[in-house]
Amino acid sequence: MTTKQIDYCIELAHTLNFSRAADNMFVSQPTFSYQIKLLEEEIGFAIFERSGKGAALTPAGAQFVAFLAGMREDLKRAIEQGQNFSAKYRDSISVCLLVRQAVFFLPEAMRLFSEREPGVQIAPVFQYENSMEAFLRKEADIVFALKEQTRQIPGIRVHDLFESRIYLITNRDDPLAEKNRITENDLYGRTLMVGGGSPAALKAVQHRLIGSGKVRYFNSPDHDTTLTNIAAGRGVCLAPGFLNDHSCQFAWIPYDCEESFSCVLCSHKTDDRPSVSAFIEILKTLYRDAVAFPL
Image 1 (cartoon, rainbow, N blue to C red):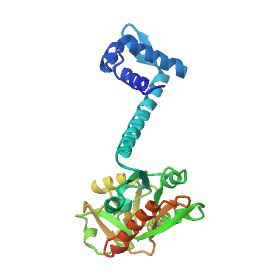
Image 2 (cartoon, rainbow, N blue to C red):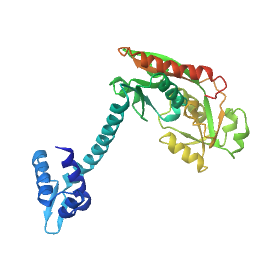
Image 3 (cartoon, one colour):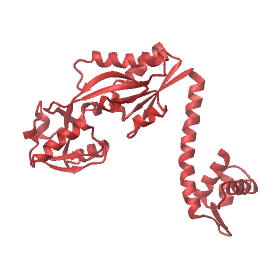
Image 4 (tube, helix red, strand yellow):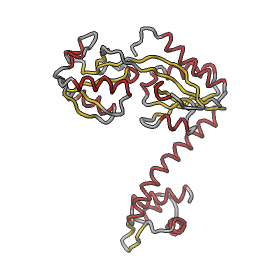
């Protein structure tokens, strides 16, 4: 299967007309039809049903084309990244994150690092779930994690980064936004959004509140959905400070509890590149110097 055949197949799925698809791909119709036929022979099933009116996707073909479209986009990005890398860099360090806010100083660290190591690319990889698993599969060189996730994992180095507290997120016009600190009593009678893969420390706090019987709650599947619900006035939520993008769209008020999150970076023990150590040290220095920065 060639990239040309993939492109032809996706185009025909859009137009469902051999003549129009061939014109759009700037080839003759016989050449176009022959490449589609070769592709179908290779995979062993018909992607299209031919008729005098044009073409129609078979059920198997519809599923196949949906997969091809996603694969083609991934391939396109991989080629673009390769072109960018080959033109400028001699090495690359991939950093796996939950969301961009998880390491707020990442852009500044990248800027400082590029001044010292202009030939090494820092490539952020944003992954909502299974970031540690991807790191352990060597799909990333560095991963942002909570220390509790790193216990008893062989073959990794754990670098302490910062301690993150728990905050209440509300709309800025919410009466709670005027407080300097939120207590359990402040949330009585309110609706709390929970779920979305909350870390253990946050779940413990949520369960205490729900167990009081004085707080309503409903499940929200992820952080972005939760923020949308808050903006819509559907409730409030508790969240780790490392998710704060500091855009001032919402109020983030410290919640009075003992629980917190030990945020770390992990690298592979087998990765002895000085550039990896240098980048981690830059991030650690930025957080160490940010004494007044709310985390």
